[in-house]
Image (tube, rainbow, N blue to C red; front, side, top):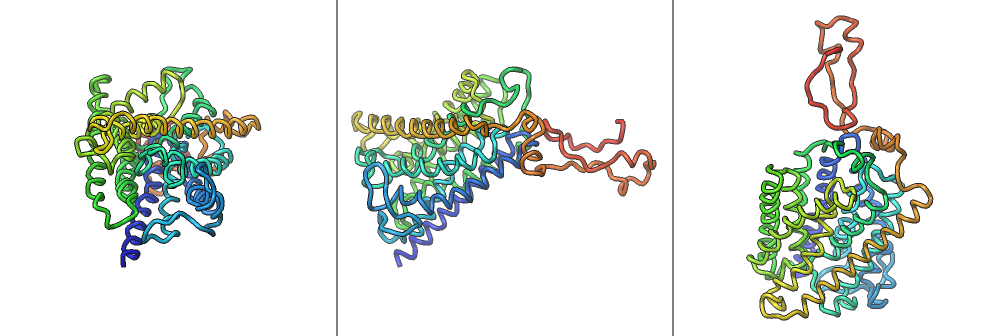
Length: 437
């Protein structure tokens, strides 16, 4: 009975985490230009399809195989072999849950390289990223992992998933270079295609995060579930509020994109300590995360690394911060609760190691691809949009007035009307226009 209930609970939580891929797709499609919205969804689809196969054949063994070392598992490939066992939880169910995490880690990179990276190069990254993620996740989440033995606490992955993915995104955005005109022409405007769509993606990610954090108990009987979902909710809310206040103070506007990323930053930051901090600690962590995200976004402009969706400020900056914050706010061992500096030092060291690992592996892999000349799309493809050039379709088609619906127009006027794609620089106003108007 316990095994059956835990199986249902973990599959439900894993399904929520998997559904977050829909959130990534909608959020990123809404934040990029209309001519590239389909290309970003295709990258998320690659994360899910290629990523799940690589994790099943090799990655899960690197993470949880019983044989191996403190650095990586060896064996268990193709899901055959001996794996670390969690009480009353079948191994295939554990694989499904961990697969959703692995896919989420590499999905962080998709938005940072949007609008200018070759799809074939991204497919190679997904393979490399899943394997590299599985190795560093072994260090923390496998009982034999060397960071686990040091006492590092990362309950649901602020470092394992988000710092790894965020610093991979930083390396990738740096290696592929900025979009044409992004920094050379200060007045250049890269219009988001659909901000309400991006908000829908944000809420889907927020919804899935309850499975992300609470599901990491791996037990439906855990007494921590209630505190975890409460801390998760309030940290996200605090991140959104402080980001909103920060942009109102600095920019004299209530910035919609910043409030979205503020909520996501609070979620990223609380993920490591959601099971070990108080409600007040969750509010503090989430609130600081929103401020750090705004500062990090401005910092990306200073160093001129182009990140169209803010993946680095959200995931890299707050993946690090959230992991380190456990050393301050943990009820057991936290510096602010009389635990001394030991846990804080372990958290700082472990998070920096994983961040450096994610950055280095990604930079080396994409550096090799760049030497082959297949990392970045051609200037013509970038100008026309990746949707049409690479994938053969546009995400949006705008219907102008057609001859069938305009009987009062002359034959000459009607001949000029057609179904036309959206403007390459953003969404059309949506108004119907006549020829010559």
